Length: 113
Image 1 (spheres, rainbow, N blue to C red):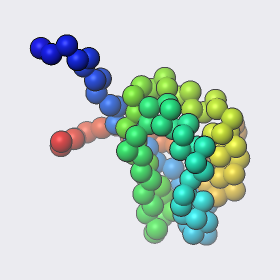
Image 2 (tube, rainbow, N blue to C red):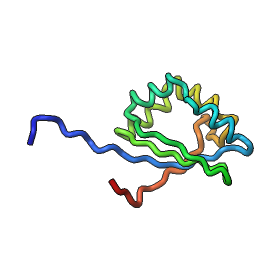
Image 3 (tube, helix red, strand yellow):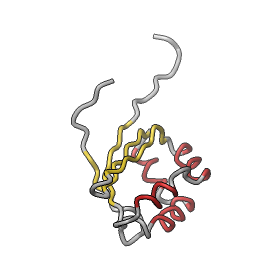
């Protein structure tokens, strides 16, 4: 073995969210691009390869991200920038009482590298 450190495998996270009716265009506008400071927070917390897809027929959102750890992913919610982002997005999507998006976590069933 070489002397280099082994990189831990990224965790693949997938989840569903839901837009309120007639909010698709505004949701897309606010994500193109996302705030630079939010992008920085995500990267600093080990998030990469983050995508959100929209089913235009149902207003359903499918999120996919690769994360370094669940604990670092959870820490993002405590940041000031994430709290501001949630407040800004609250009028467009279904949210929990704390302002976070309502999400349904999905279990990985299959993966092909």
